[in-house]
Image (cartoon, rainbow, N blue to C red; front, side, top):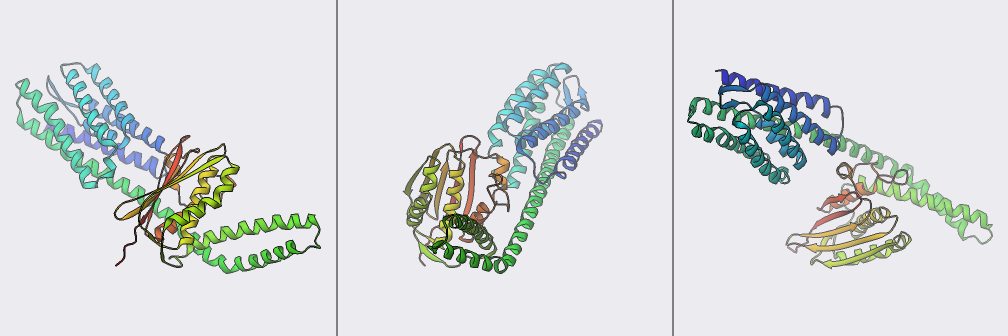
Length: 418
């Protein structure tokens, strides 16, 4: 009964720390920076480990029961490699002053499970939630066998009641805490998705309202400016001013087109086309900007098949992505456009050697008005890219490393005749 009470108190403090962290950290921010989140995971897990050790239940001179493995396991899986190493050092540092024969066993267990956690942490979130819950529970059961059952047999202290109670509470608590973390994580993601969806809805309604109110008079102004430029009797200074005004109206028209593209739920026309010609046209259009920035453009086709959609919209996707890539290399670099294919998809890899982006910036790509170009960007280019690609049944994925470069992966379904 003493063991059960002590373990439940351990579990209570772990749950209190998790809920407190959820209240203080997640609810105050619409998004958390990755580096701060890992720091919070480390601090929270370390506090839980220390609390569990302080509230441990000694049953025999050789055995001390607690739930320190739960924050160590989950903190490492959710935090990654460096958090795991930090928690391992913390756990060993707290355990050494307690003394006893279990120090070496603790060190061996920490090394063994740290290795397992580090190898699993990279692919942990790529699996289904049920798989994650099952793995954490099995690891907890394995820890109870290696850390308590085998040493109990070695010391001839075979108390199956205490061991069974500990193994059951540890496994069940690990499953319960893991499930709680998954629920909190899902709520957090859904909250961000709701905010993003609300922004999308606002932009969509705004686009529909400005289509007639702004675009039509802007077209008239643009036409009159072109007539002024064609008139030979107009002084040169007036033509210069008119040319600048025409450039700005063209820029305003392009911004409105981006809004309208986002507002349209479907592509204007659906035809089957090959992507080679559109990539060639895109390269011709961006070449002057690339030369101005001392950027070398390289392309290579390693795909087969065609896709269905609007080729003009598809070209707009390529232009938006390539323009962003070139502008990310103001001091020169290389822009690569490579294609490949599978049995079901055509993939386009657009890679630059520019500034790169942080994980939090990548997470916000496609949001309205989010731009990394300070005052020069409208924050609509990548939003339109995501919208067009999704309308064609494709997907956009971005991989980037700061000061190394960025790769945008565009995936489109291959058209197959019925």
